[in-house]
Length: 341
Image (cartoon, rainbow, N blue to C red; front, side, top):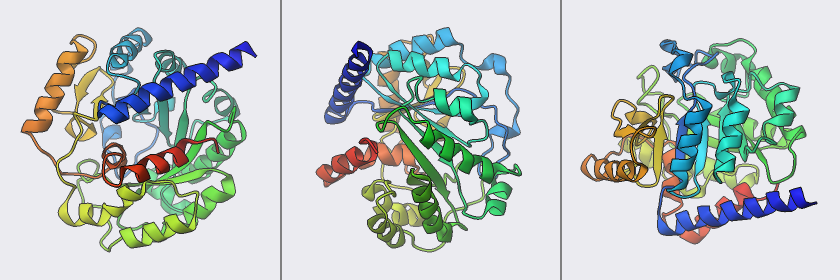
């Protein structure tokens, strides 16, 4: 009883701190690459092409430093990314540390390593939500895209297990698709699959600054079609404002002046801080050695002096969509995406 009450109070405390960050336009989102190692060879990513040294990755003590320093910025949504995060055997400890520092850790995975034990324990470790990547309803096409036979089957199995072992309805499980030039027709079948699995569905525009460097963007308008699907399927929870700007992003090569560096930051496996995953080669410092407020000031200077409009990926799109009019709609949709399901 007391343990349940303590968890609830901690959750509400984090919600209040995150809400204050939204209202005051502080940092609300951090991408944290816990590893660049990966067991896949995805066509739309190049991290796997240069095998990294695990010795270059953050230790648990360093993660504690990061959790404490980020806490000074507020309560953040911290997206644990890679590479494939579940390659790290101490990932559950990383989640617990960030949760203890009052953040909302979330995770994107290819699903390969989600066995029964992992599914039972990962959300209980303090993870708020987990997304499993699935880009095609056709298993053969997904496996070819991800460079690993059996990846489609393992992803679907991961979604089944994670949904079955959610500790409560507040923990969310999503299917997420990278929207490219050849899978628009796959979106509705994937939404239906997500519905059948009892999970929610999100879509993210392909980032053309990484991977093969070949533009894998849709060649036809997508906004109207995706908005129609969102109206039809309540499982499709990507923010309306994000979807509304997809055609513009595809046609213009991006959206407006990016607000990464003000609302969002990126930390790589060595602690290097940059605006986003597209600017990993332009770090402003290292969170392990530099003062967090100095890093915040540097990020904001870079954001002002080097305006960028080169993408509309979901990390940037989520943060910025929350502040685009009508703001009431963004908060209603955000609540719908995180409420007990």
